Image (tube, rainbow, N blue to C red):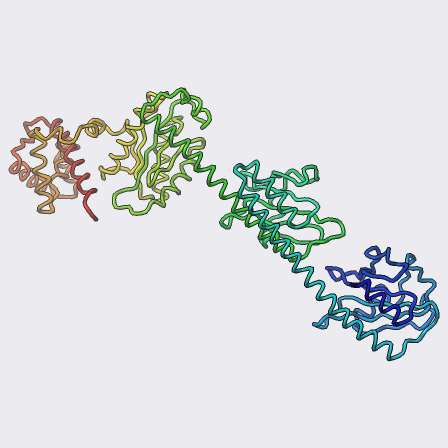
Length: 543
C-alpha cells in the first residue's frame, strides 16, 4: 500500500524522490517504510532518531515544513549518505496524523532543483497525508486483528501442549517452547523457585543452547515480580503464580529489531497463568500418586503383609526398615465437624520431624517418625498440639524396628489415640508405653467384664452419677489413685474432708464395696474400665 502511495505522490507532485516514514512502536524513531526508486532497497534500513531531520520537525509540530533551497545548509536537515541527499535542494515534509490527531509518521518529498511548493500543492499533500493516515490505520487494524487471531491460535496450541504433558520432563519444555512461539521471542527461559525460597533455578531453555544464568537470586527480581513482571523492548519477565504464591518465572529475550510491547507483557502473563495451572495440575497428580504409594505401603505394614517388594518400596519412600520408628495416629476429637486441621497438622509434623512419612486419609493422619528420642517426640507433639490449639488427639506407638514390629505399632498408636480421646484427665498426646494399665484394658473385647461383680458395682456408681449429675465415680477414682489418702483426695477434689467421707460412705451404701477390706487393685482396674466405657458413651452421644 505504501509503495503505491509513494508512486502516486511522486507522479502527482513531480518530485525526484518520495519517502514515507512511520514511528516505531516506542515512538522514538522514524523508520523508512516506503521510498520511490531507486531507494526502495533502503526500506527498513534507514531511521531517524527523535529530533533528527525535517521529518521529525514536521511530526513534532504537526505542521508541514519546507526547505526552499540549499537544503544541506538548513539546521533542520539531517544528511543521510545512503539517500544521496547532497543532490537535493528543496524538501517538504508533511506529518501523517491519525484520526485521534496523533502523529504517526511523515511524508517527505525531495527535488534536485530549488523549488517553492505552492499552497495548492501543500493542500494536496495534506489531503494525501490524511488519506494515507486512514489507510495506514486500517492496515494496522487488519494486521493487529490477524496478529490477535494468530496469538489466540498459538495460545490454544500452548494449552493443548501442556494438557498432553504427563510428566514434569514433558511439561516444562512444552511451556518454554510454547511461550517462545507465542511471543515470537529469540529465547525463553523457565526458572522455578528453589526449596530454600530465596533463589530461582533454571529448568529449561528454548532453544536449548541459548545462554542464560543457571540461577537468579530472588532478591534481584523480586520487586519486578511483585508488580506482576517487567516488560522492556529487549526482555520480558513474568511470574508463574499458583494460588498467589510464586512458583517460578518466565524470562524472554526479544528478537533483535523487534521489541516487546506492553500488549506482549499482558499476553505473556496470560500464558504464564495458564502454564502455572498446568504445573499445579501435574503436581496434584504426582502428589495423589505419591499419596497412593504411601497409603498402600502403610496399609501393608499395618496388615502384616510380607510382599516381595516391601523393602524396595520402603527404600523408595525413604524408610529404613532396619531403623526404629514411632507409628503416629491422629484423628479429630469428638464433635469436631471439620477436617481442615489435618492439613495444618501434616505440615507441622513434617516440619517438626524431617523425613517423616505421613498420609492423610479422610479426617485422620497416620505415619512413621524416626524414633531417635521417643520421649522428646512426645513432648514436641504435645507442644505442637497446644501451640496450634488443634481439635485432635495424637497417639504414638513404642519404638518399632522391622516390619513385624511396625505391624504391632499401628495397633499401639491407634490404642494410644483412643486413650487420649477417652481419658480427659491427661494430655491429648499419648504414647503407648506410657498408658500404664490402660494398655491392657483397651485390648479387652466388648462385654469381656460383664460378669465381673466389681465392674457391675462400679457401673452402678456411674448410673447414679448420670441420673443425679453427681461425681461419685470421679471421687472414687481419685481416692484410689492417691492410695486412699483422705487429705490428698480432698485437696485434689477441692472439697472438705468431711464431704469426701460422706461421698465415700454413699459409695459403700450403693455398691457394698468395702474400701478398707476389698482388693483395691482390682477395684481400681474396674473403675478405669468403667471410666472408659463412660467416656465412649459420652463421645458417641449427640452434642
